[in-house]
Length: 484
Image (cartoon, rainbow, N blue to C red; front, side, top):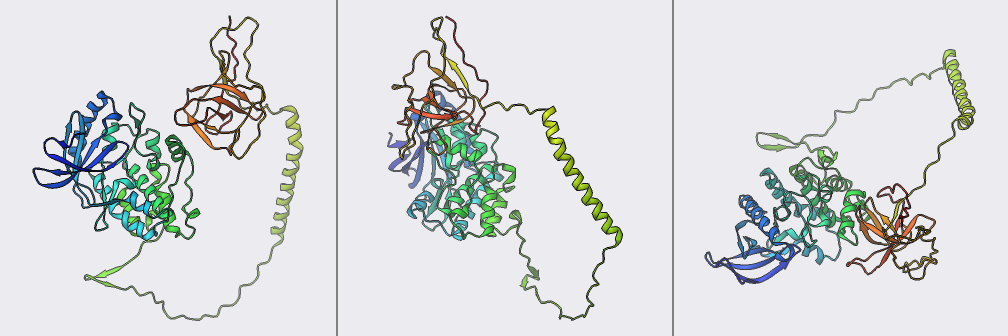
C-alpha cells in the first residue's frame, strides 16, 4: 500500500477497515492539516469494474463537495492512484456511534438521548435530500461522534458510486454492497430507491439505540434481507416494556415496509423526533401557543363558573304494539333463514360434491444419464428421524446417502430456507434462490426433503427443505424416466 497519495497526502495511521474501503489518517502536505483518506479496496472489484467506479466516484464527489452542513463530514478532494479511487475528507476526532453502542454492552439508550443524537443526523439527511442526494447506507459506523458529543454523518453516495444506479448489488467477488442490517426493503428487492430508504435506515438505527437490539438477525446476509422484506417488525415493547406509546408509534412508522407508509420526508421525521413522538404525523395533537407582540402569553384554561340547573328526569320509553309486532316478525324471519340453511347445505353437498384439494407438490426430475430399459427413477424411501438437542436426521433407507447418476433432483422455484432437521423449529442452514437444483437423498411422509449441499460458508453437507414452504408454492410433480 502506498504511504503517500498523489504526492500530497502522507498516510499516518489506519483508522479502520470496512467491507468496501479502508480509512487512513493522513497529512495534507500542502496545507499542513490532518485529513481522512477513504481508499476503495481494489481486491473486491474486477479491473473493468474499477474503471466504471472511477467515473461514478468523480461524479458523486463533485455532488458531495457541494454539501455544506455542520453535521456532515466535508468532502475536500477526490483522486485516484494506480487505478484505485479515494476520497479526501475532513478529519473528525472522536469515535463512531457503532463504538458507542458497543461500549454500552447491549444496554438501551434512554429514548430522549437517542432522539437528541439523531435529530442533527436527520437534519443533515434533509439537507442532502433537498439537493437530490440520497445516502443509501445510513448506519452507526457512518455516524461519527466528535469530541463535543455532536454527531457527524459521513460516506454520502459511496454505495451508489460502488454499485451504480442499482439499489443492491454484488461485486464480482460476491461481496454485497451495502449493509443488510440497515437496508430498506426496496433496496433488498432492487426496486426504485428514493429518500425514504434513508428514513427507514435511520429508523433501524433508532430502533437499535432505544431497544439495544437490531430488529432482524440471521445466519446469512440474505436471511436478514428477506426478513426486512417479509417479516413483521418486532415491537420495541418486547425489549423495553415501559417505552412511551408515541415513541413506539414513531419507530413503527419510520420502519413501515412500504415507502408510502413512512414519513413523507426527512423533515417530517425530524419534526416528530423533536416533538418526542407527539406530532401530527403519528396521530398526536400539536401544542398550541399564543404569541402576542413578541411575548409568549399563557392561554388560560379556566372555565366559566359552574351553574347548577335542575332538570326533571326523563320519562321512561314505552314500547307500542306495532314495535312488538315488528320485533316478533324479525325473529320469525331469522329462524326461517337458519332452518333453510340447515336444510339446503346437505342437499347442495349431494348435488355438487366439493372438488378435492390437490396436495402440496414439488418438482422432481432425474439427471439425463441413460438407464437400462427396465430401470425406473423413483424418489428415495421415507426415512425415520429422531430430533435431538443437536438436530440430526438419519434416513433408514440408505446407509451412505451418496449421489448417483440416477439420483432424483429437487428444482427450487421460490426463495426457500433449508434447515438442520425436518421441521420449522430447526435452525436455518442456508437459503436458496429460484433455479437451484439439489440432489434428493431422502424424504419423509410429512413433506420434508433431505438434499445434499456443498457450500463454503457452512459445515453442513445436507439439509431439509419443506415442499409446502410459505415462501413459495411448489408446482408440477413429474418423475421423468429417460429413455435408453
